[in-house]
Image 1 (spheres, rainbow over the protein chains, first blue to last red):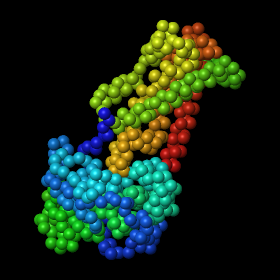
Image 2: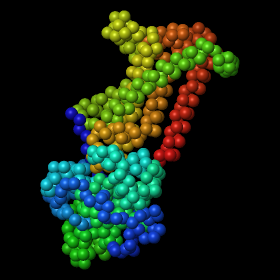
Image 3: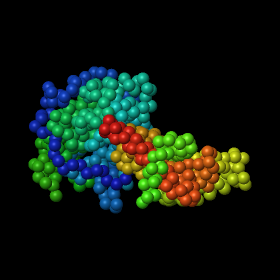
Length: 291
Length: 234
């Protein structure tokens, strides 16, 4: 009997640095001149924009989920609903359990209690219609293009189609000129864009993003946010974590606020930033340190 | 001291004269060890990778055993292979005893655990970094093993080199199953052992110097390849 090694332990701690692209407003121009280097405008009407056939896996139902490491509950009593459309931002201070929640939803971690259930008609193949990009992009030691075609080959896509889809994903993330460069020697911003291109090429119904801009400078951060907006516009559900309030304001349609392993509220973004329901969220919004 | 000075002289004289017997011995040494390492790598790399990613009952015992096998005494391996190939052994009909093939077999047994155990460690470390991403992309363990082996290829060169170092330096196994027959199964290490026992220390030391030079140049070449590739691939 061969068991694939399950992931254990805690998620990597997010950095304490706040390097977000602050000062940008939600409706700012994507890829402002020069800011994102060779980035090209994104066209939501290209064939890549449409999600793959089928793949109706949403909504996602999470009920009473608990995840522990060495007997300590890191996430507890987690219940949330993820519905199609829009960008949901998991917000909270470092160590709130945001990354764990993302991994539990994506199925990288199995909860110790409670359930994570996809309710759509294609729920049985839910894994085929999700993708995730991590805080530190994990790229293979091959070219940028080969990184994307590799992911497509894992989804069983035929070789000629792979190349076409991959090139399109690179084009839409402004990386076409770098297609034949080694992925590991790209800049941090380019690497994160490549990770997003790889995820996008899979045409996921749900895209999970774990602090996608935590280690990036403002220009690279804006480029990544523009890609996320384009993926959203193309019809993928976005669930992303951030500890950066400015980013949450720019990106969120809906906010999930977490603190100390508990989900304190699931609120439409406009309402959250006006009238947060929990004291902790009020403090967090005022920029106070949470106890 | 005078012995070692004479040894340099003898080594140099042998090389300068391109002594036919010496060249024959060097070529056989390389043929035996390179063949053995090639087979050991073909078996040990996937084996080590699989051990790193698959979880099954008794896995820990296998890992411990594999690490212990890294230190197998060559004479014991030689003896075991001898018993298998000898006239009363189960593989006697192959008629391989006292041939280079028998020496290759013995070295495969010696080198495979080294390559596999080192590979397992390299791949386990790499899995820490790649695991979540590969699982997210939907890679099963079989696919993941080969993806990681490929991405670790330059680190794994070190594992293979360790195996090569072991193979080319050992004397016990090749002596027992090869028999140190002139022009047939005589390699560098067995020649050194013979010259030492005959009392020609200078010649033995000269051969030793050539063996070390051989080993160093193979390693230097491999590290050069690795550094170049690291620079290119990041």
